[in-house]
Image (cartoon, rainbow, N blue to C red; front, side):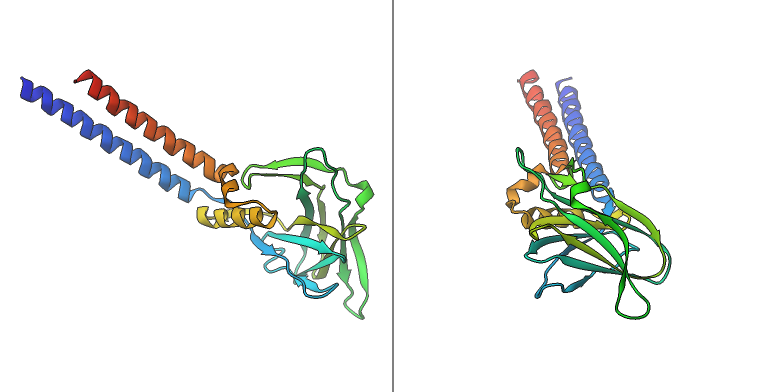
Length: 236
């Protein structure tokens, strides 16, 4: 009888440990397979004033450009051989008690003949109502402008980011997002963004892509340890 009870306890413990491992494996598998918004992240570097920065893959794929104005505007270029929807939005880091910088966006189309341009859309700094938006994935809060969203024909387009004094860091979104980024790729985007805006690696814990998985793993470990401790007390 004692042998049977001992065998039953061992079987239950083995079954529970196996079940916890299965839960953990399933959770990690789902975590790695869960898609995030797919976009290409670009840290803007310019060597001279008014240098044109080409946006790779836009407008077919969303591009997020991190940039810092240094006494002059920054101009991005989008080239398309077919009609597409031009989507552009600018964000800047939120500071409690502070005021947003007067960022402005200007979209122009390069004329097919000659060196001129034609204005397509504009967000005037004085007309932007900045919305406070928490980006849980990045673990940061931004002031967010409204979107420029307009159907345009094939051609070469340029998006200018500026402020009256041409200073300040920003995050520019161009194009439409789609699901498809992997977990580790997303973590790389998050860390690059945080580092650009001056946050240490510890701030990764503020990202929902980090604290949710850690919280669930911690909960599973607590349940596992509690069950083992309870069994020791019961069978002591």
